[in-house]
Length: 242
Image (cartoon, rainbow, N blue to C red; front, top):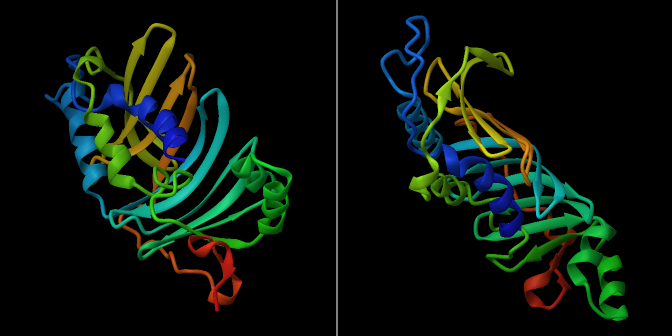
C-alpha cells in the first residue's frame, strides 16, 4: 500500500510543499502580504502538526484508480477503507497491530500464487486478518506523518505557485494555490479561517490525476481491534485468535 499511496498522495502534493514565489497582491485576499509559497508552507506545517485528520477521495496510482477514505492520527491509529480494481478492503490499525478485511478480489490479488494460495485467499474473504507490522498494503495508508513529510522533499519543484480567488470546500472558506507544470495543474486549497489546514488537493492532467479532501481535523480516531474471535492471525501462519 505504501507504493500506491505514496504515488497518489505524494505526487499530488510534493510540488506544493514549502515554496513558490508568486502573489497577486490583491488587498481583499486572505493571508495579505504573504506569498503563495509562505501560505503553502504554513498549510503543510499546520496539517503535519494536527493530531488527526480524515483523508478521502479518488486518485490514480500506477495508472489504476484508487479510492481511499481513512481517519488517521499521529500515532498511526487508523480506520478506513480502500478500493481499487483489484478489490476493496476495510483497514484498522490500533496499538501495534493492523487488521484488514478484504473481499475475495483483494486477497486473490494479494496472493498471486499457486492454486492453493488462491484457495486460501478465498477463505479470507470477508474475514478480519491481523497482518504483520509494516505490511506494505497499509503502511502508507496509516502513516500520516510519513506522507506529509514527503511534501517537503523536493525543493526544485516548489516554485511558481499563484493564489486564486477564495472559494469553499465542504462549507469552509479556502484559498486555492495553483501550480502548472507541463500538462499538469496541481491545486492546494488552504483554510482561510482558523488554522491554515489543507482542505483539498486536486491534480488534473498528467499521469496521476485525482482529488483528496481533508477533514475531521483533531477529532479522535475511533480505531479499536475487531473482536478476537473474528480475527485470523496472519502473523502466526493464519490461525484464528481467541
